[in-house]
Image 1 (cartoon, rainbow, N blue to C red):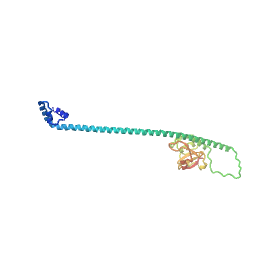
Image 2 (cartoon, rainbow, N blue to C red):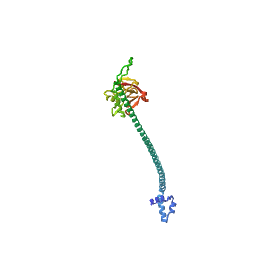
Image 3 (cartoon, rainbow, N blue to C red):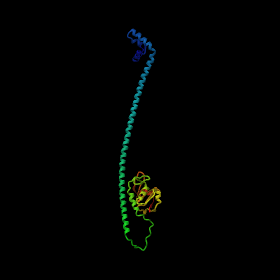
Length: 276
């Protein structure tokens, strides 16, 4: 009966004895209700208080849950927006990379064509110079002046050194490799050492040691095969004629032809040596 009373109290929210009496259907029912009411009177206030507290907690928790759900939805929306923004930036960067990659490929192809044209020009110049030397050697020079010409102090390079240029030009496009001295990869002094080795001349693998070899040559007396030095003797190349030289520049680059009059090379030019 107490359980029934508790249920009745919860479902009808009756809080007084008068309500119990008025709700009776008969005298026996009223007596029974009064007895039950007296049995649970001490519990009514506590039970009703707990029920109301529980109801309030449910309402509060329901509100907190709704707030938490809204917060969760907001965070999910923010993260989704951030994801879309990141994906958009990645797409933009990829598009930019593809564009730059295409430009770089175009520039590399153009540089290769330029290097090939310069190599062809140098080969033609070397061929013409060789023919001129042969013609000069075959002519008989008869002195036609009573005054002997002033002797030159410049020592001509050995005839084999012209072949060094052709050997080095054959490696155009080979990647720069620090310490490299073979066709798979060259550094600057490695290219010089290897090219000269192909014509039977042994040279050290060091720019500083190379600068101590042979004899000095002024810039207006340079001949194909002469060694040209830059950057405090930290870099070396092989002169090929026409104010140009072939060399292995630096990491990330390849064996190529450059001009002595170009900015960095002109600014850091040290001098030249002729290997005898």
